[in-house]
Length: 400
Image 1 (cartoon, helix red, strand yellow):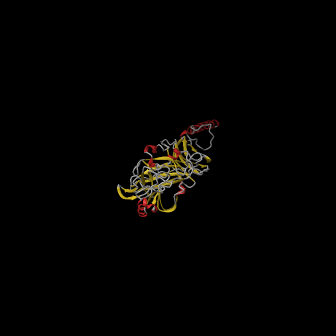
Image 2: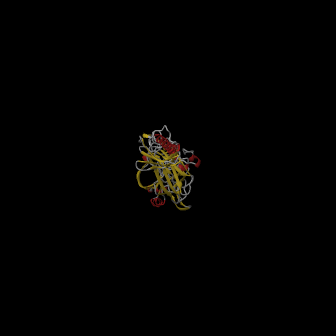
Image 3: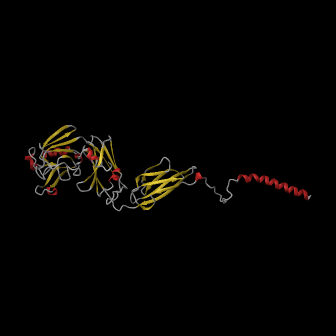
């Protein structure tokens, strides 16, 4: 009996061993050295993507684009927003390895960078990074013309005058985008304004075509002016429309002003220009009507003519910063059409001045000729860029 039981136990052990053998084979792919933590070790294709954001940290310098790179996988989306919810746009590169913002990080801002990535094995993941930029220690501001929504004459330039010096002119000019409704050719030119400040104007190659719609987008926020200039901390934009082709022809030798609209002469007006032979002479060349100022006080001492006049003048139309106007001058009536006997301005009767004032608009060119003048209007003395050839003007661009 005992022998039978021993044989039975041996046979049972063999059966159990046979049953356990397949189970052992099912788990053989797990490394015997790995601890039994209950987690599966990822394959090489599923390892997390490493995302790098530049800049990083607190109070970092502004003025650079935001850059995001990925290694070990691909970027599928990147969103960069500031504390007010404004986005820095950009596009993921075709290979999915990088993203660069179209605009620069601006001074004194907080940014959040959110990314979505995909591993080589197809696993998706989201990440977030934050950084702040240092505030601007000095701010540069802009005064620009023409104002938005205006209708201007065919010689009106776009003009930006800066509060502080601009050393990084090429970098600033790259941010100035002019769009026209008809592909008008033009160029920026850097000049010294009459005030002594840095200035950049955009003028067409030739007078604007009537009806042209123009938009300026000055995307300056986050741009550094350079030494002593400070940062720009906002963008600027203006839109305007070009009106009729009006040209004011001023012949100082004949003492006559002619208004021509769309090729038709509307009126010839007897005038008196600046007195020959000294500082009271008028300027020649193309001056552009800057503003219609109405009735103003004119004191010739403000332009260095101490022995001339100090009086209220009607229908005043500014042509230069140095003080040349077209206006009513009834005290000089005997010289209209006969002689140049003003202190540099173009004077006419009250009736003619009233009519003329109603016809013209800022941006209309005054093409002034005469033998005895002070010279051509300088580019920064009002809008004198038309007195340079197209080649000369283009060479004033910082990008040529």
